[in-house]
Amino acid sequence: MKQIIGVTGGIASGKSNVCNIIEQDGYPVIDCDKITAELSVQGGLLYNVIVKEFGEDFLLDNGDLDRKKLAKKIFNDSKSKELLDKITHPIIYEEVKKRLDKISDGLVFLEAPLLYESKFDSICDKIICVFLQKRLQVQRLMDREGIDEDYALAKIHSQMDLYMKKSLADFVIDSKGTFEETKLLVLNVINDIKGVL
Image (cartoon, rainbow, N blue to C red; front, side):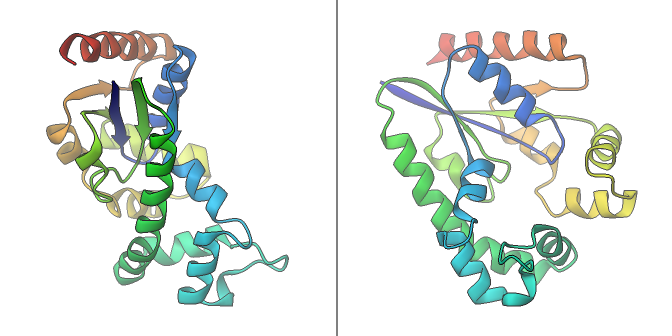
């Protein structure tokens, strides 16, 4: 029997690192961000609806989506973010369901930054929140993307509060430590999940 384990957290909280460890341990991971990227290439389902709603001002000279320009728009304008979520979430949800349907047995992990916002929690048997204190989260995001603190905070505040995600989750992995420390926490959580399912 298949068991779906959601993995969520805030931006730059360490979700990808945790999911890499899960994959290395032999489990399939369906990554919503990768699916979004695949469907956002020219001619893709997401590409088409985004261009239709936001216009060609958000395209690069070669016709690709200008992700940085679109990101600045939605992180500074809540109405634009709501619109983007409304038009893209159903498409991503359907593609995720298709990929989940191809797996019939065992644990499968669903990496979804907007797991609660997109209602993916309704299809998960258990949920892991990858947690990081805001101060560290802001610093990691600034270092990773080369952005200032105000923009980092705008990105963080555009998502559901990480403390709320933590309170809703079945398991919490604090990713403040080293890779090896995080790996140990991840493997322990997987064992705990196997013990309760």
